[in-house]
Image 1 (tube, one colour):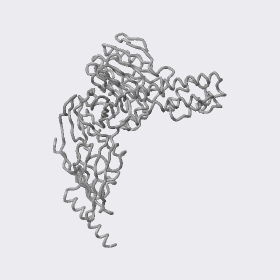
Image 2: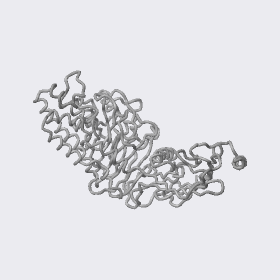
Image 3: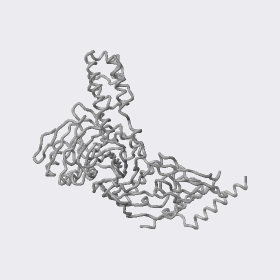
Image 4: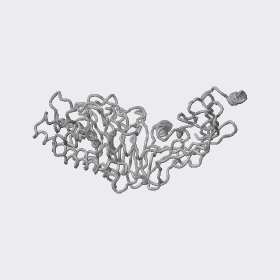
Length: 552
């Protein structure tokens, strides 16, 4: 991603799954250009902290591939201060700020409902390192954690493209055109490789600190290798609620959410709802997943003490071989990182299985006492340098109880034509992490009746949105023929938002014996049943039910 030095921000980010589930490594190369082989980006996660005119940005880098092929490029304003962060923070932060969907159920449905079919309906909206090349200046060359870093500058897009290609960055077909605007806007570029003795398990998030008043995600260049509907999560920490300045703020239509089979399923449904809503909004919008100070986010994050205590435990083991084996078999420190450290501290003889790291007797057979002692010292140093220090720096962005906003969107390559910028608006209220709805059940003669009423966190508290006849929905929700957007707004750094679109929906009418079937034979969009036919089918099924009762 990139940054406009006039408007602020920077950044190429890579990460999470759009699914926002705990982060796993995927085929992605932390930036826009990958060395030799372009690898698609599956999602992006960034943490921003704004302190006056200074921004701290922590970018999650995900990569799967061979270490020599790793490379990453991100445009930045000026010359940023660089350090490495900890990827141990992102998954718990995502879970702590993930929207939760709570359905409160009252009443009881009938023991047995007549077999009917869905009438999804109603609800239509009524509102509309390498040597320099000519024209490229290497501003800095330095080692940052596991990375060999060069910060480069150029006034000529073609010269920078040539430099990147000469250094084995594959720009893909669109890369040359997409990089030019950032060069013309005066961006510098941070180019990363792994140091020669580092492996992919050593990859950590990159922390960048730079001068800027408005965080910005340079999304345009991400189009080089973006997957369709790529998820983007941005956490913005500051004095008040963060807002997108040049993208719409989108509130989805929670009527169409699957509330009925647990919060996990509801969150998966929410991700699909956001994708549909952003498409309807023209492809450039953000939803607010959370905004406030009420969550004790730090309680969910790993603590430095957890790892320092583990280092103390390992240090107390007298035998060097046993200490190395205890490090290899421990569960506190991520195993991919431990393995990379072991490979450097006590490199095994060629052909020896890495299982040997777990067995003190094998280590004693393979290495001299001096080698084991040196390996012990190296491991302890690296545990502090590669685990404790990055985690300490990452947790520092949460100091002082900042206001936290989580913004979420999905974007495809063709929608990445505008870099989203953000600011902080002290005049806006909070957005709870909880969304609530109420399912009210009753039994009327032969059939269950139910209503869905939206509650707190949806911006439509108390609005009845569905009237249902038959068994209430289960794992598969009924088809609701409504748009995925409820409201879109433009927002600024102060004052209330300006409403662009606010839909008015009639109450959806749903008839179904069992929403778990997912069947919609009649209703909006099917063309199979008119009102008379649906009524005839209903009475026919009622007649079958009565006949069956009489035979009993």
